[in-house]
Length: 239
Image (cartoon, rainbow, N blue to C red; front, top):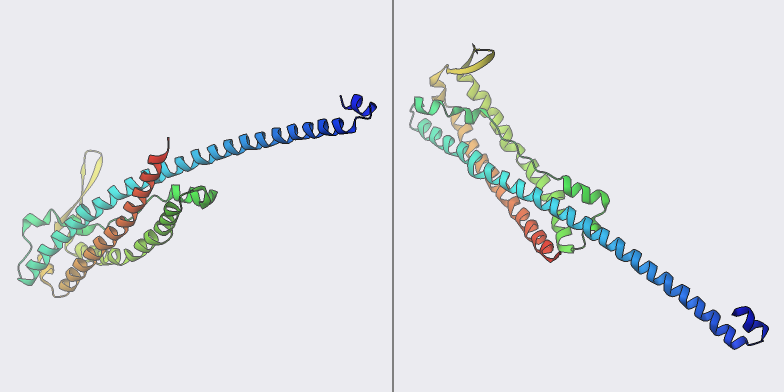
């Protein structure tokens, strides 16, 4: 058609035809780019939903664990410590009924959390999370609040190290064989150790640090619950 129009010196019609061809090509390119962008956006959206879902699961698991630490593990230590301090201040020995519970003082506790999903998001780029509120909340939680809490809880754990050292002075480990297994039992060695003057500051310190640990964990749980609410709200928008 172009050759025919050119041969007939019909320049205007030739030009319109050529422009039409160019427009068709441009429109095709634009459509292809839009389809490609749509596909890329869909892939990015699926990835975002996946990472938000994984972050949500990690938060739920960690919140359950922190709730156990505060309301069971630390609460039991605090309860026993309060009883021991009361007995000590009254200059009374520890009754045999409490001896079986003393293993609480012989153990610390482990504070940990799952930052895997967040680290995966960071490595791929925080801009993959389109919601500014969620992005900022995750950064504050995993780059500040949780690391700070971990550092702050090192103090109570050091106190328990002293508690365990003192506790081990009170008992003599005795090994005996049961079948193919070796069992370790602890028998009371020096009952009067409970009444020593240096034990009182340790009990008071333990009570203070247990309360501090509970407070710090509960404080970071508030930030975690806020992240969880934001993520749940965002996921609720997704098909």
